[in-house]
Length: 374
Image (cartoon, rainbow, N blue to C red; front, side):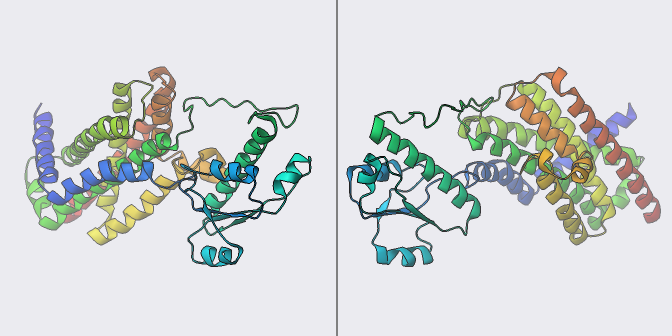
């Protein structure tokens, strides 16, 4: 009972320390509001509002129809361009795509020939250039069929691919990017706040005060983990409700309470990692370098930037020790597929097990550092 009382008051001290620091409060608000919105709705792996120009030397009904089809939201309203302006505009970076129609383009299409329309692309943005090329190609094929047959979806061959998307019918990238951004902010803030709390005690000399009190290293360490879990979980809940669901309109197909329980488990694991790094570091500069070394792999290898299955085998095996990988799999299953506890218990168990291992390792280091200080 006394141990629980000690942990309770230590958690209160940590909460007061975090919430009483204006910089920390601003960082939390920025991470779970502004950063999530910017990352989820910012430029990504789709073409949006790309600049396109048309060099129309045919000036026919077909080329005008094709020009009108290349518009928002994928492209800016097309601008007409002269032959001597193409190089200048592309060199200046004002135009990404230039589509040129030769004379007699419509007549050759009507005759059943295969006229060539030239597309010049500024490929300095490789991903956008490739995707934009595919968009333009599909639009030209569809509109040409509509011009000839009146049916945009007229089959080009006996075989057709009928596409049905599961869990995200419109293929909206904001859904996935919003959850991925939340994971990134959870990892960064929890690790940074917990490690900074450890170093703040050391730099301000309050660790000596704690050492002379009737407190155990376990109570001190656990209080820091719990306090940061409470703060970040509250920020996550508000961000999920008002930013992700209300502002970004990302639906949660599964149980929100289950999502919060899994998030709490992950936060405990991330806080244990933060405490481990904070105990290893001897200064804020060292801690900052350690955080960079840990956060980058967490963001890149956990499945938020690309499928884990597409990584080399040895990297996939290494990522199994990252709680963030299991949390992202858990979150996607609950949020998008509506999975229940029976489907995600393994991910939750792995997060809890890895968190316990990191906490045990950090507790050993913390006890050793306190013994050396004493």
